[in-house]
Image 1 (cartoon, rainbow over the protein chains, first blue to last red):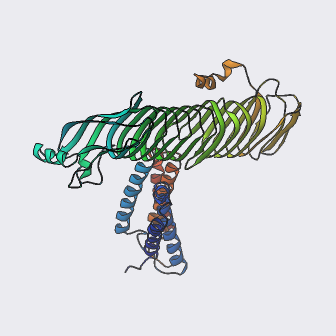
Image 2: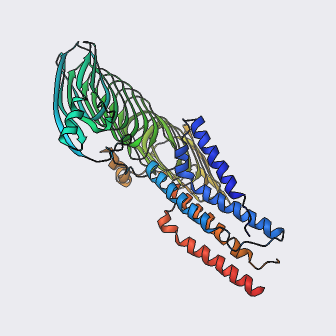
Image 3: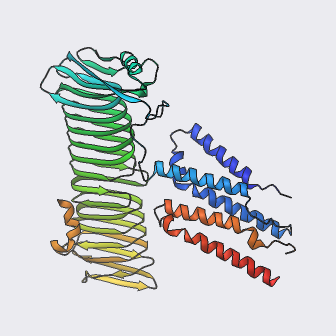
Length: 462
Length: 59
C-alpha cells in the first residue's frame, strides 16, 4: 500500500517554473544558478519528505518502511550526475574541448585535408576589414601597405579525399567589398555542414585599418592596428597588441583574452577563463563570468569589473591587480577604489585615494600609502588587518561584533572591549577617516614595517 | 506511536538526502570539498541506525 507523496508534483512544478523562466527571460542565467544551487533541490526534497512523514506520524498513520523508494533514489542519482556535470561545465574546469563542433554531428570523425588559399586586394588607407562567419585561427597584422593580403590554408574534415575536394570547391574563399569596406569570407560548404570547414589565415592589412571579426571558434591574434577592433565569437582565444582605437571583445566562451597597448577604450563581455590586460590608455570595462585569473597591469584610466560575485571600480591602476576565484590582490592603486565581493581574501597595498571594501566572507589586509584617503571596510565574516605607514594622520573607528581587536599601533587609540565585542577609536593628527567593521573576525591595526616585512606584497611589483 | 515501523527508520532516507544536498552545496559555494566531507554521510547513517535500534529496544 503506497500513498502518493506530494513531493514529486512539487518538484515537477518547480522544474516547469524553471524552464518557463528560461524561455521567458533568456538573459536570466538559469544554468549558472542551477550549476551552483542544484543541491538545494536535494535538500528541499529531503526536508519536504521529512515534514510529510512527521505529519503522518502526528496523525497516527502507519509510517512507510522506507522514506524514499528505490525509484526515487535512482532519480536522485541521475539528478546528482546532472548537477555535477552542469557544475563542471559552467564552473571550475573548462575541460570542454575547444574545436569540437556541436552544431554538426561530426565530432572528430574523418580525416583532415588541407587546401592552400591566398588573395590580395588593393584598399584605401583606413579600410574597415570584416572577417565574417569565421572558423579557425587568424593572425591579423598592420603594415605600411595599401592592400589586404591573405595567405593560409583551409582545413576540411571529411571521410575521403573526394568528399573533401567536393567540400573545398563548395566553400570558396573570397575577399569582397570595396576599397573602404573589405569582407573576407570562407563560405561554409554547400551541404551546410559548416563545421567541417575551418581556416588558418595570416592577414596583413594597412596600419590604419579597423578590424571586425565575427567568429565561430578559433584563436585570433591582432597586432599593430591604428583603428578599432571588434570581435564577437562563440569560442575563442584572443590576443590584441598595439591597437590605436577602441577594442571590443564579446565571447561566449574564451580560454585566454590577452590585451596590451591599446590607446582607446577596452570592453570585454561574455564568459571565459583568463583575462590579462596591460598598458591600456583608455577606460576599461569588463563584464561577465570569468573563472580563471584576471591580471591587470598599468591601466591609465578607470577600470570597471562586473563579475558574477565580485564587482570593482578603480580610478586607475599604476601597479597591478590580480584576481583568482578566491583572492584579490592589488598593489599601487590610485583611488577611489570600490570593491564588493562575496567570498574572497583581499590584499591591497600601496594604494592612495579613498577605498571602500564590502565583503561577505574573507580576510582583508590593507597597507595604504601616504597621503591616506578615506577608508571604509565592512566585512560580515573575516579578519581585518590594517598596516599604517609612519607619519599617517587619521581618525580611526574600528569595531568587531565578535572577535579580538588588537592595537600594536599604540599611541592615541583607545581600545574598549565588552564580551566578544571590541572597538578601537582614536585620532592621530588631522586626516582622513578610517572605518573598519567586521561582524565576526579579528581586527589588528599596526604600523607598516619597512620593506622587508611586506615581502609577499612587494613581490607583486615585479 | 501505534506503528511497527519506527520514525527513525522512516526518515532515514530523507535525512541522508538532506545531508547529501548540504555537503554538495558547501562544496559548490567554495567551502570544504565533497571529497573531504563525504564520511559525514556514514556518520549520519550510523546515527539514524542507532536511533532506530534504541527506539526498538525501548518499545
